[in-house]
Length: 179
Image (cartoon, rainbow, N blue to C red; front, top):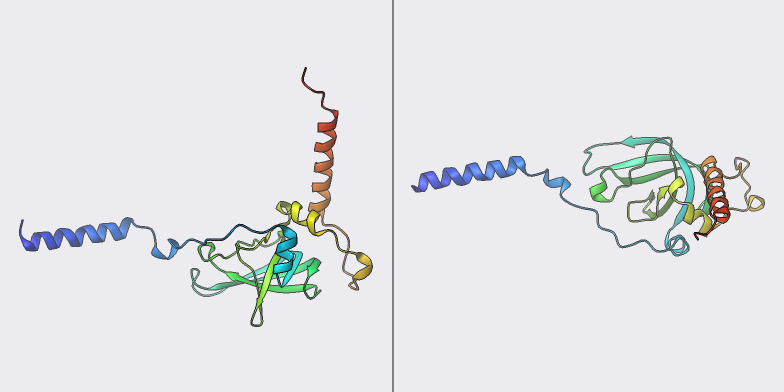
């Protein structure tokens, strides 16, 4: 083989490798340590609340930019009790951005960085329907301590989950032991 032929083969191999390799910006993976229990996560966070997403504003490059998530709040366990908040997260889950979806309810554990409220995949932030353990551990808020008239009690998801757990419990208690 000639030197020219070897250089050409190396160039072709490098081009093929570049074409079949995934985008290098998506190769970075978000890596988190396991989350602490809800009570410990509450203490470590600057704020913890439940609420639902009313709007999501994506800006700039989808890989490196941030997303501003507007939320209406329902319950505050920690932080300033406001009815609406804007949370910032990375636009990409590979950069630990949390994948909020408009119209869904969440429990949000976050922190203040500069003048921005932020969260990410490495916090206990989760869809509210997946966060029953958190709500049970943190406890309901006390309506008497809240001065906001917008509070209306538990969300439909929490009520539904309570009935599901009660039904499962009744089913398990009524089940006869195997003979």
